[in-house]
Length: 169
Image (cartoon, rainbow, N blue to C red):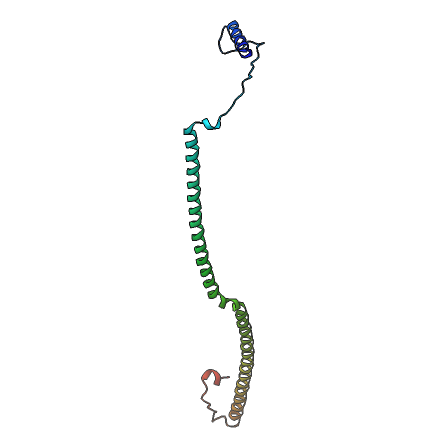
């Protein structure tokens, strides 16, 4: 009876306002109805849709896991190949580990050879200077001797076979 009274009050306020579906300012909406769900009487198509969605989701997840397994296997294979390539590169580069040491040794050898060549050039220069001085002194002595010979016998001039430029000195 209470429900009927509330329903009637709602209709009266609607009629007073002149529009159906809207309540007047002083009216309150009262809901005293309990909701009982009978789980055995749920809609079968809804249950089928939920089960189908769960199966589809499970299949999708399994396919994703399969793809991830394939990706993981290919990643592991690439890792093995990459490691093998890096090992080959390391083996090829291993002789270069002591290149700096060998270059340092070669630089030291070059420095010692340069020092030896410098000393040799100094010695050769000094010897050439000595030879030049001896030739000059010998030339001077020959000129002095030729002048003495000319002074002793002016008619017989000493002919040393020197070019005329040197003989006139």
